[in-house]
Structure formats: structure tokens, C-alpha cells
Image (cartoon, rainbow, N blue to C red; front, side):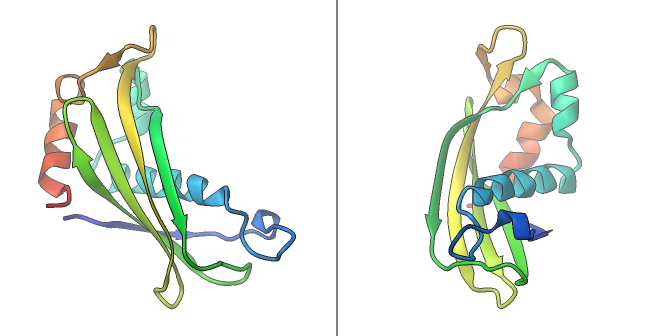
Length: 139
């Protein structure tokens, strides 16, 4: 299984009234990690859009385990949890500088045509990309 790692830049503006990173930021970090994974394996979401497709979020889950505060280090680890004809599930782990898990989650995506938002099979639209995901997914 291939795991992509990306350091997260924590901004003061990302904190809430309790002095911890606001919970919605974790979803942005999932996207940051997903984009990094795609780039790490040699593909591009921009190229997907240029080819006439989107990969919208179908489902998202996040479990918070430990607060992250401004001034700490944080990283997002991302992997392909599962893939089938229509859906790709990405797994995520947000860890702090001590490698303590602060949040875990997943997002499920489908590939749709830009012009009508109708789902298409990832394997048919992007066979090389799909094959790479098959090779690196969690076993």
C-alpha cells in the first residue's frame, strides 16, 4: 500500500474560539492530501478536468481524536482505501509532530462528465490511473 504524506501549514486564522484548529479545516486537509497522492503517482486532477470530467465527493467521514493547536506541526497521510467501477475511497490520517493520530477519515468520490454530471466508470475514462490505484490500494 502506498501512503502519501504532506505537511500541513497551520494558520492562526484556522483556529476556533477554543484555541484549537477548527474542525472543518480537516476536510480541506483531506483534499490537500488527496491532491498530493494524485501528484505523487504521476497524475493530475487538473488534467482530469481538462479531459471533461470531475471527481466530486460522494461521502465524507471524519473522526476527531486529539486537538491540534496553532504552532504545532501537522501532516496528512493519504492512501487509496478501495476502488471499484464507480467509486474511489481515499483514507486519511492527520497526525501531529509527535506522530500522534489527531483525526482519521475517508472520502468517497465518483467520476462524472462535466457537461451533464452523469457518472462514468473511472476504469473506462482513465484506465492507466485506475490501474495505478489498483496497484497501490490497501490490501
